[in-house]
Image (tube, rainbow, N blue to C red):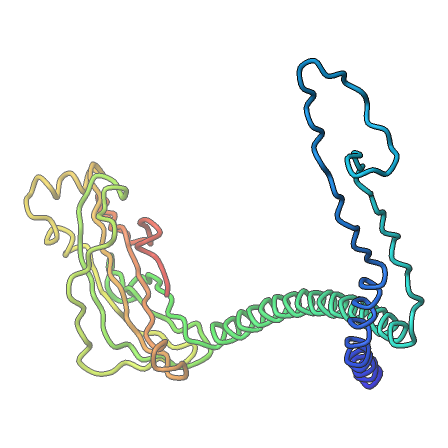
Length: 297
């Protein structure tokens, strides 16, 4: 910056000192070299009269002699040698031009470096986003592994023959509180004819809060052979169920709360579905139904 300031100062000084003499020299040279040609006295020749002989005019310097115009050629102005002011000005202009080119080159280099830094920053940001997502998934996996999981099983009653109990067991690592349950019975020809999504009706809360520690179980629904005829609206429907022409499905869901999760992620659901099989002498209740009827959240 100091060298550039010195060059600019020298340039301005040379221009200020050389402007007036240069103009004076140009005017004087022009006046000295300029010559005003004398006015040419031209006279038109007298046309000859009739009967008089026509003779060419002799160049004897007489008054009636025709004079030719004088052409004056001005010499080219001599080129003046460079003064030290002009040399300093030219050198300053060269220095400024070189510094400008150097500045442009430095600016382009800086822009390229900035572009490379931006690309590196974008790559680092993308890698950080991938790492953050992986860390979140890992943390979510740990949370899911530590949360309660209610699993539905069907167990025969040890005291009543042809009687079954739908059990909910906590297979997770933390306690769970059952807040509501819902159940329904549907008789259709095949499980593919069950309504999608499942229709449960309004869930009902248990009479007392049910807290299941890891490994504990609780009964959700009991069903026996004697109740098989009660789920059929007519005798013909019961006959088709007994002959396996139609199937009776008992399904429902359990809504429970995770005691260690955040408040917005505390509620979970477990859906279950069973097929009641009515035989001639014995009956059965097994887990069946589409995936939507046996899901976990």
